[in-house]
Image 1 (cartoon, rainbow, N blue to C red):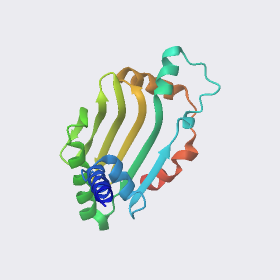
Image 2 (image 1 turned 60 degrees about the vertical axis):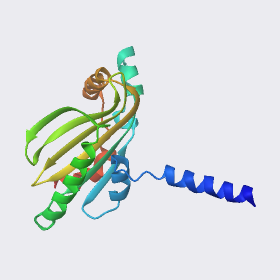
Image 3 (image 1 turned 180 degrees about the vertical axis):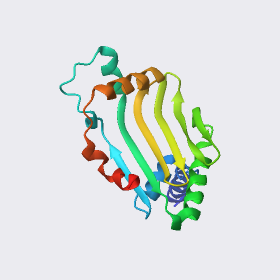
Image 4 (image 1 turned 30 degrees about the horizontal axis):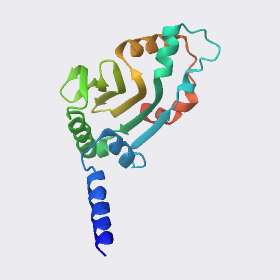
Length: 178
């Protein structure tokens, strides 16, 4: 009897400890992926179509550090401006968490963009791009990878110029541009 009470107490404790109620971008993405006014796209490295491109060792390292990209966009309309403001404030509040280290901010007030990251300078696990504009909505882009660093991201940007991007993976985002 003592053992089963002790085991139950340990399991309950582990359950409570493992339930983290802090907001995070990952939770935000999961909770909003299927909601009205949101468009979610997951992009794999295959979007770059680099099979036929000769890459330098540095470029290969940059591409290999990139695992996937998650995009969540909110399409603003005249009818959903209150919801747009609410959701924009939620994302802004999440990005104020110290684990999201801001690299750069562009624009002012309610229109603009920011680039943040999670990890250390030499081992970045996630880059976050958050752009918002009252007339269009907002988009949050999570670039996930292993051992990414700012040099890898800059190199990856140069590789993008050489790639033949598979636009089929980005098709759902066309609704946002219309």
